[in-house]
Image (cartoon, rainbow, N blue to C red; front, side, top):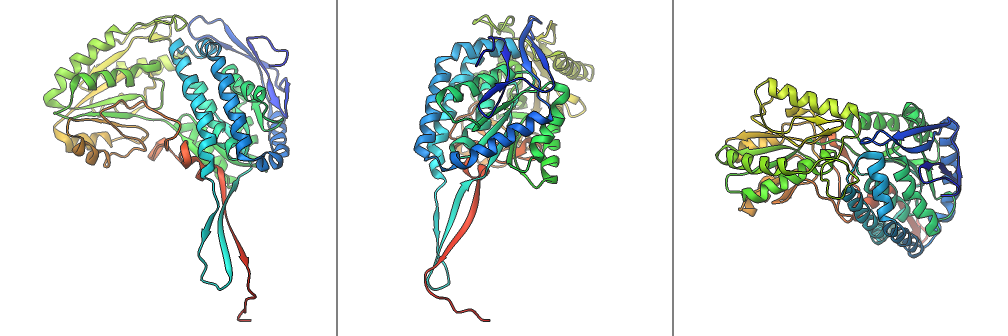
Length: 487
């Protein structure tokens, strides 16, 4: 980017890299505590300028042929792939994600850029039959306008890309408000789009200090040019975003927290279930919205499953995320560590059995398996967002479904059974936007309708379903014959 150094990040407004009105702030490496990024801190005026730049760019971009928009997104995807190692290093430095996690992020994000252009073709006009003689009618999909994408730090390349890929493909212009914890990572995404040739103002980047987040977001939502807001993050902040947008009658897409259940029935392949639970619970230190937080298992097989999972969890390698062999790195900050520690300690005090883990070295919290978790324990309901998983024993499939649904959340879920037809019937009864049969709760692809229910949000990212979220549906008619009116 422009003249900035490798550890610095500036704002991008109207095609120009610039400093922020509120000065600068630092992001520190969660593992080493060293400065990872020096970042421009935007204020309200910067947010206004970004929205205005996007509004100026909208007319031309919205009229740009889809083939051209796809070409630019494909080019950006290739530039991102070419810089995959750089992305992974920055992800590790800013968020403590392992090197492998950063590489995976880039792989999925490039697919999102390419798929967004493919699925934008679903925004086609549709003929509608009229009951009036000589009248032709169409349902028309048009770009909405300026879209604000608010992206989190936990899967920074994936979710930063998802926040803007479909809106751009569909002819909207965007303002990406980067996470305060991964601003340089989000800046790299925008750099790739700019270097690919996306016109000035079509993509804008706002970075802000944590203390200024509320003001910057409020300014972006309130701006008259902004027509859509998409947010990925906690349910608490999602409610604030929705309430603010509601006052301005702005549509939002929200992908929020989760408390994903992995249901294991008595006939399940326990080796497969343990492998899926281990991956789902501990990948990226459990800091994924789809992370397996609860294993709801038939009591008849609970002991065997617990033994298999515990062996896997205890064998995971923890340490410096920059080491490619490390599987578990640090949590994002002290608050995250304190939250997980408190939830585990509360569960143990109230009778849960600690099978492995429960210890920290700095911000690295060892993979933790709890058995005998009950509703009286905080961890039964609260999202831990860390490397801990609770085993909850039930008697039969009916109780398993009831327990799986005993949560405010509803993002992802999974069911393990050798009887796939039975599992599919049960899957339809789980209150979640996503359910996987004989697979982990952590899975995403660019072409799917990704999103949750209940406190996990509303709306869908991905595939042709993003068309509904980021376009306006209009009704246009043509009266070919002279019409007689009653008055």
